[in-house]
Length: 357
Image (cartoon, rainbow, N blue to C red):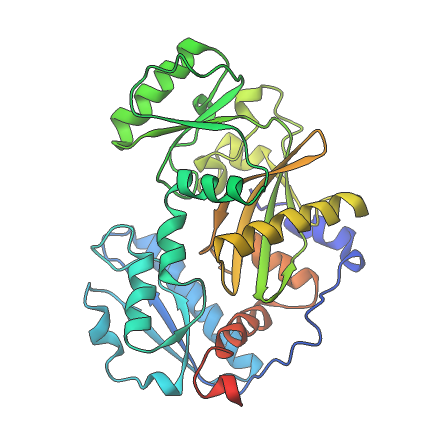
């Protein structure tokens, strides 16, 4: 899916610049890189994770930060941290979960805070809330931020729904889990069938939304107080004629060689007029703030009839070296190590010693 980033980046490198250039970034404080290794993973997944950690370490060391890495391989997170003084480090939290504990990203942040560590990323309550897509949509609606019309179903009886095409999602999953071409439905029968599939497969309510058949953007944001939109990436669906295919499926994100992964081109930066870019940034910033995101996040947003609709807010997006966020940061003058240093610096402002330095 990201195999076209390089060419797109080179086309318009001078059209974007960072508003964070006056941010006073320190490069001397120690960083503890916390990451997880789950031995139930496939060997190639473990090797990929270890390569990424090497890139993180190298990038931050090249920026000037002393770095120590801690690999969490068992559920006892506290034991891995007991030898470290929280006053001596900022934690770069690359620990997606605690091995053996499902959906534990919020627990990682909660444990770090209970031990008085200052860490990058959103607080545990925000990470926890982000799993509940219905709660997120209610929050957006309360603050007047456009999001697709929606309804939740815990039975296949969907007689009250009359907007098509629609998309049916599990209501409590991340990373497009459960999203395939079959998730887009165009009539009542397929809607009932897909709701039944979600209920039976995921054992959670089904979220049905108006399918915004328009342009899709993945928008990386960073900062606190002063929040900046990095150059947005557009998912280009022009080669996909069928409405069922014009979306980012799970395969599109994670399975090289699949049709969606290969056919969806990523345009970075997205071709937007100045007016469109300003409207996109306004919507993205508003959603970032009302969600309570901290340091960085990524939003999935679609454009239809001049309105930007927030599909999803991810307060803990992947920040690996090959992601859209890393590419977007590089586009405005922050190569990988500098991007990570910026995230650590955002967190350092909350550190009891560094924040007053």
